[in-house]
Image (cartoon, rainbow, N blue to C red; front, side, top):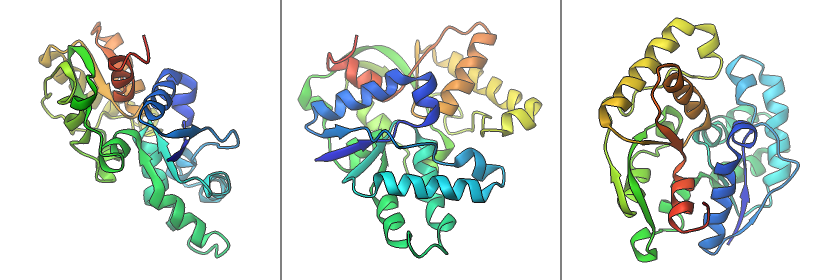
Length: 245
């Protein structure tokens, strides 16, 4: 099975280990993974701020780069949601891209979703072990594309991992891209509430499969003296398989 990695801007810049873990796990599961160097931003920041022409051109570029891939997998939910929810709308009047964009939308997956719904992975059969207490942030964008309990399903298959649900687990973290900059008081109140919910779990590690959420919540944790570690589930699985230290 051939898979193209869509690393995303935030992951590539701030969390490259998550992208590396994604590749290592997919390869361990028998996928051939490539990284098309011409990929760029998915266009979400421009789209969210009303610059549709700019986001439309980035969507075209992503189609050109990834249209021949069998599958496209990304470790960050918001960019998967941008492709799945908005690309067809953006290019609805561009007949040259109509067929290709539908294909890209259909074959783009967030990493955890891909493991559960495409590869049908059962980690119990692979002796994956990762000792530690974790909690999980359900990101808005993942819920928007129908990804809810898939991460929990995988975590429950990892030997030694203790999952503790947090209160308000599906509450927004307050990031929302430029929302955090435009409405800092609202954003700050929302993320501080999220930090309190994390602290109440007693978990040492927070699993977050969206880079924007990770950046926002981890920053708030540091400001409040909360020393929780943040990882994607790809990193936890890779470590549990002995693929990452």
